Length: 81
Length: 146
Image (cartoon, rainbow over all chains, first blue to last red; front, side):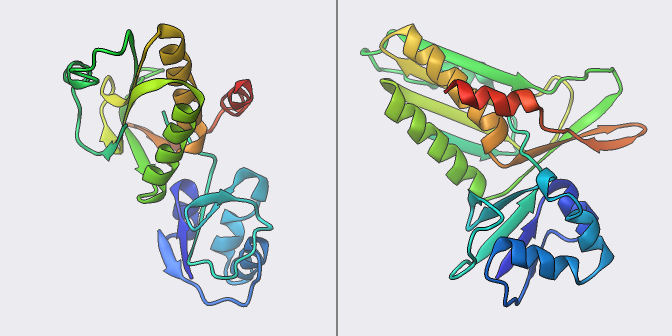
């Protein structure tokens, strides 16, 4: 699936998006798999409460299932307006 | 109903002159324009990042909620992204309705939701460095009004 990062999450991980092959069944499982990869992921996901997630471009929870999902995005709370 | 996400500047006056033009069934037009604020006096520019695709969907969903809730004749939302200078317009909302109560309430609702449910992130760039603008608890609390 396509995994996207925005704002300081993008800066900490060092890339805007990447294709990730994973056996994870939930967003939380995907986060755990990413954190296990490298320190920069661990730094970005250190405090999950400071992050929001969108699944196929809809806001979701970290326990959201990944079956059939094409795109997951991680970002800090939004500051529009 | 019109939603535009763009890097280009817009002219609030021209947009309002165009908005709901020719409609004779409306008695009220309310608008809000958000402007880049230089709080301390050292802002070089504001960098606005967004999530192409989700941004349009999220704003469209927020507009749909407003239309379902109030009797609105028309809605316009413009939100910019990219590097914006202090004083530049960031975004605008306009609502048209039969009466002012609906137009004011819908514009207020749209602003509260655009603030914390549309995928934009602001970064303040000064001569000394750059920092992401943190979301405020008050902005999240504001959603509970609705």
